[in-house]
Length: 281
Image (cartoon, rainbow, N blue to C red; front, side, top):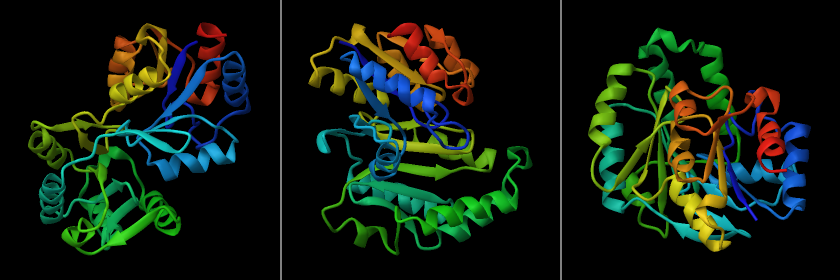
């Protein structure tokens, strides 16, 4: 029996945010052969479930970059950011007018002025990111109109309830500001990564995909040498390094490809299916 951990964006999902019929069929074949397929994503659990339900997948999940691991909708492991740290980071981001989202045990929360912050970040950001105003508006409106995002006014009031913070997702469209934030966030107890050149993701030091993979392997009593990981970006690196066999997508960052055992086709070419049929089935 093998455990296969698969990233979502840039890996399982095409650029149209769809799971191809070929990828879906390959996953089903792998599961029918007795292996375990795990979805390990930077997305929140509620966001991941929208896809698994749409495509009728029943996979264990590593959400928020593996900060929280679920099997049969039950929490197997959780690494939350301490409340005081959450408050300190939130106040820093607010004072610098940086747009960010909180991935929590109660869903995704954003400051009430989040959309305005995103628009200001776009206006003051670097031109080389090639975002258009229309694209930024589409992204913000889509997320605000979904049932996933909730608003809050005061971070201290939000943290008074039985809520735990899994991850900060920080939008960084200005390179100098990004570097300053990156340097500030590199401190004991925190894990700092990115899933794109335009974001930073902050978790508890144990809240990464590598730990999510280890926890899942231990749960199913599968040795790490019998695990496979697939990904495309820097937040996948801990998982790729922990796995017995690592596979980079054809569209992966070059530095990600360099650390992997193999490279498959791109996410738009059903690279997951190609890898599963080459290395598992």
